[in-house]
Image: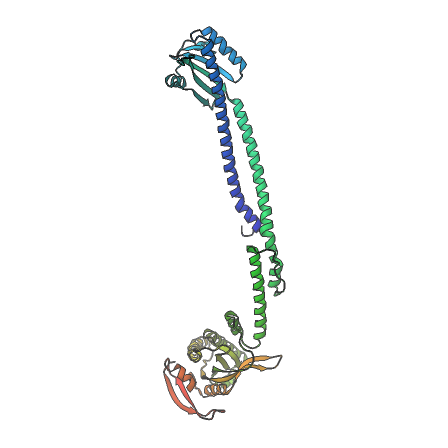
Length: 456
């Protein structure tokens, strides 16, 4: 079913419903026609029987069997549908019959007995022999006293032939209607559903190839037309998204571009003054390590280290500005500011040191050297924007805060996280910090207070 076309699925779904409806209609049509024919046949047979009963009452003596026999013999010859005729008196004794052996015997049939008691006509069908038995009372005229009964056995084969012919006609009509409706459903589904949907294919194929310039043609305002408008809007959005992604990916990493697109925001690509939190980390003793280890092993260790740290940075929403040797520079507040930028930066630093413990356990199991890092974090005003040339752009920050964070990471010892006073004001309620005094930083007029985050 999954590989079937919509038109075929629609046909397979609707056809059983049409077929069931057609069968139900045919069943009731045949049943009604049969009942109608039977009722008409009954009325005809009773009418014939009443006419004969009146003739018997008017012109014959119920006790004169010879004259009655002549009458019923003549009736048999006149109407080929009549198979047998018998006449009884009021006591149920057979006074005349086509079957001579039955003369002057008692008619013990239930239907005759019922008519003698109730005085009302009766008619019944015998399906097995395709016969109908009509019994009517014979009454005197004008006193209308019942003096006997008239029983006529009719053959109803002719009626069955009519019923069978009618059934054949109705079934043939039903099959024709079913085929007509099925073909109509296929054509309707093709015109109303399949054909309009096919108009989407060229557009979707172009979108798949990254070309959003071919819109879906829209001819009406129904559900498929509305779907076409939404596809066109989607294509326009994808086109804009690709433009932003292509343009802004020259400035920031992919995860930041995705964040921009998801939030439907547009950062300013020109330079601006903004408060950000700058994070630096580098490996302690990395220079000596490169002297001891070969280039292949150093690259392997760095790649493993950068991968682990990058995952942590992404988790805490940091924008990785650059990797420089063994140094990592991460920004919080660029391209989008947050009130929790310093807090997230410190939490990320702690998470990195914890992640490094796990990484060192893996290195130890592989016979590799353990590494340790120092971390420096500073918060302050920076110039945020484009840095580079027309062919190569870098979305980065410039300013004293960057210099301060770089000075802090150079001052940090192994597994130490140093922060400046501004960052301390944001995070001291969440972490235990130790004051280390003030340091002089290039570009700063006054010494800067430095704190070591203790809860590592």
